[in-house]
Amino acid sequence: MSINKQSDIAANIQIGPTDQGMVRIYIEADGGIELPLDFAPEEAEDIAEELRAAAEAARAVAEGKGRRR
Image 1 (cartoon, rainbow, N blue to C red):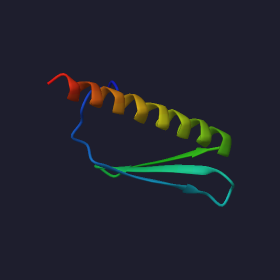
Image 2 (cartoon, one colour):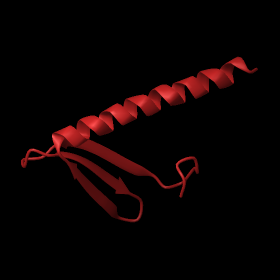
Image 3 (tube, one colour):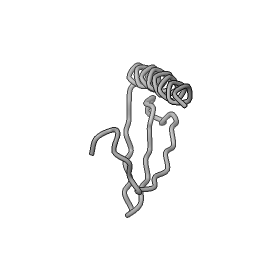
Image 4 (cartoon, rainbow, N blue to C red):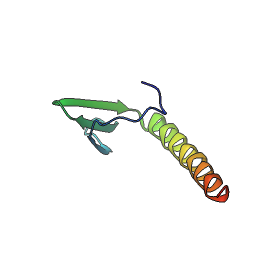
C-alpha cells in the first residue's frame, strides 16, 4: 500500500509515555489488530518533526488546490 492510496480500514491511535521511559504509539485497527510501537524520546521527537513537515506540505498542497478554481 502506498502512502497516497486510500483505505476503508478504520483505526484508533494513542500516543503516550511508557513506564520504561519510551514513547508508545499504539494503533488498534479493524479485525483485532493491535500494534504497539515504542520509541526512544529522541526518535519520538524526530517523528514529531516529520509529522509537522508533512502537515505543512499537505497544507501547501491543499491551499494550492484551492487557488486553482
